[in-house]
Image (cartoon, rainbow, N blue to C red; front, side, top):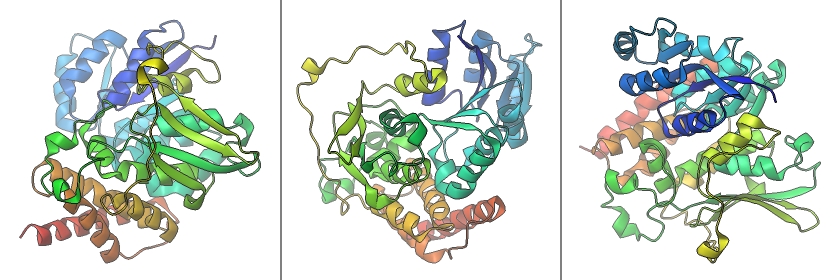
Length: 394
């Protein structure tokens, strides 16, 4: 049994907390080297008292000062702040495994630092690949990092592929990837009903316990759009070879179709601890604390085609990938701004895709040939998205 020291980027979020629950169950196998959070200093302080990391990092400097005060009686925990602190612990040689669970574009820098340091990176931050696909995968190849997806859908695909053919699906005889989606809380809503959706309703996912931003993304199907782009980069394929299936039970997490007609699927309860445990211990299997799947209780599975008229974000994501260059980074930036304004009550749910599409049209596409270009285009797209929101809300 190999002992692994783990850094958790985004420890106070749903993926981070699920990761720590798996670690808690295996104290002889895993230890915590560093924990990070954005602004939740009190929550991170409580985790530090339980797991005793060497480092605790707050993205927000003010929150870091508060955390330092809360941990004043724990001199063995060093408190850092900002992106420099996040990148320092992500690349530190003492931790061989990094869980990349910071939500949004803010996670790209620290995740990239972990990749460049050659870590085993458990990737939950899909935006890193959406923004910088080829550059990110090139960095993985150069450093020899071990990139293991822990989004439930991508982990399911990973488990259904031969280990030596992860980046060569055609060589493995794969004809299609069947990417499943829950459909979110508004799957059966009419277009008229969607006009009055509230943030509280959008964050009430029927199957998964997730943060507010990803819950809204699930409700708009943008989460599936981002996952479509991520799957293309992870498994070296294209959108025309990926088919999205709405599966409201969220038990089949994704499937892979082979040339001989076989379809392999990974099933499990909708619990993030399963893919996290798979990534932490791979290629071994360990207890994740997840209840056994009761297929008799579920009874039957349902599948539907996604409705791209009511939920155009999935279409916009596929189109941005086809355009290439910085278009996916613009898509992601516009979505983050629009979702944030929706959650604040400043934008209608149905205007989220409107803002994204108008921002894509208003932002010139550039070759994504450096991270500096990507970060600059991310900043530009956010400003253009705010301008579009201002026009809509006058």
